Image (cartoon, rainbow, N blue to C red):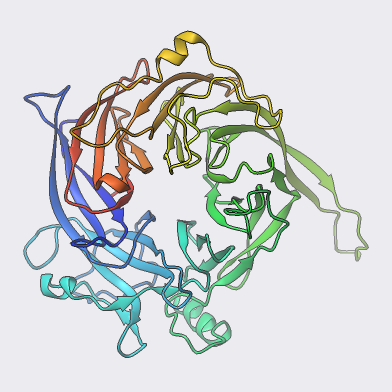
Length: 485
């Protein structure tokens, strides 16, 4: 990786910094194995962009109306949540990233839509942000109607957010024509809030029977919405009820999509495990779930079942068969050996050979790693003495307090999808999110409590990680992604 790439970093509001950031990222040719080059590019000071999704598009999705003299050939959209426990402030921002702007040819973000704090009117930007404007933005996000949106994803037609404290999922339809915009504004806006060019979100509220953890599972807490590559299946994790809800995403005739529950409508996990993030393998044969409470990875195989629908039909109607998904538990693997009870993120390397999970020590952990723990008899595999040695720290970082936070590395069997523990790699404190580079050579870890993004060199053959550098300048980093633009 010699050519510079762009990375995006989302953060919580800090004492001195806030917003979403862009940095250049490249290999240091003088020390390719031990050093990288990173340089600040630009920043947009929006409120608590704790998670975002990138949407490269060849077409204008009617989020903005560029002037005739300033029409980009590609529309590099970024949709980001604004995480707040106030329903009035919780929402999403619609951004665009410009590799070079029209003012000084430097990279920049532009805010396409938000709600003006002063006038309550929708804010629309036609790519005319100046640096002074970006430093004084007073726009709050488009409301999600659910508190603490902490995850966002999108198809070509729909934006989904998982609202943690709201116990809900918000569903925004993306307009592809002026007719869609007019229909949405006329029919869907019930409380006179300015949502243009998005419709008022359809709110999926969950009030399920909750799990046994009275502190963390007092109600439903939606944490993640995972889509298949074709966008036709949606998985929604509810940390509060220990369930994964499964939906078929159906396109409707009104410029949007409808969620149809799978049969069965959810995957039931072990009580108190608190599912958080999820990932599918490349062939979408296996679903992996990282659980915050148990610190384990739950693996399910996915198969399709055809169901015949018996119904009364007219002469011109035919029987329709419905394809539902069936899930079977295929494996269960311990990742949080220090019982920090703060497991967070999960990703598979692009070659499919290794799976990685991040684990935060939220103050409930233990000084010594857990070797035997049945979590109520759920059959988590034991680890060998040799593997136990891999739990020792690889290195202490600077003068930070010792932490049992880290990344657990598993070898993944390509055929069965089963995992084999390799190593626990310590990180700085609170590794909430991480990203694997497109070339598989690096892993970047956003460590909130030490205000740092750590850079690990990844051995492609062994999957193991070595800390080689750190990126500073962003307080409370909680999301990091390599640019898709």
